[in-house]
Image 1 (cartoon, rainbow over the protein chains, first blue to last red):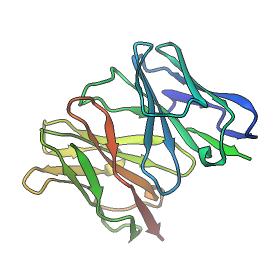
Image 2: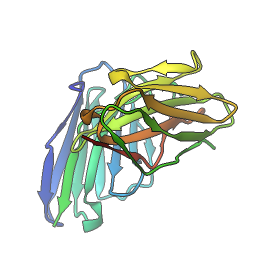
Image 3: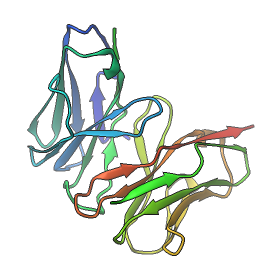
Image 4: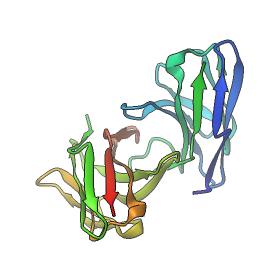
Length: 115
Length: 113
């Protein structure tokens, strides 16, 4: 699946570092999502953007800061993370957010490790 | 509220034998249901979707799923497993009023030679 591209694929950072995750979709979609996937837990929806506007913040700590400059790009800015933030971060896109029959298309994720 | 339950956390089959991954859903409305697959170190790939058209849905890689309203089930099947099918499989329901995806806990499929 090359429709949604995430970079970097792997990231190791200390708790005091600042880094950003990038997601780009080439599907012409208008909605983009950030998910967190931790071992032995269901996928957790973090943020939803629809036509560049944030429509969902699922009680995510402020050390995670999303940015959506246009419908094709989504960033997740990270600062002062905790060890429990180590996980696979997945980006997804769909035609439009908020519609029941819309499948989401996922990128391959960024494996984040916090030292 | 909608929810999904994947009845098996781990399924092991021999190559060439049938695959059955079970999923039950809970929904007050006519649901939209999906199956996704995740191979190691990869994202989730859409296998198939049900959106109130035909109850037998054909997907990619020879997989199919049957929507059974009376049993509130959406089991995933494949007639003959291949080694490349070894992965994590997620049954997903879409919330009727928000479109949010509700994921099951996942089923790990092991394929033995």
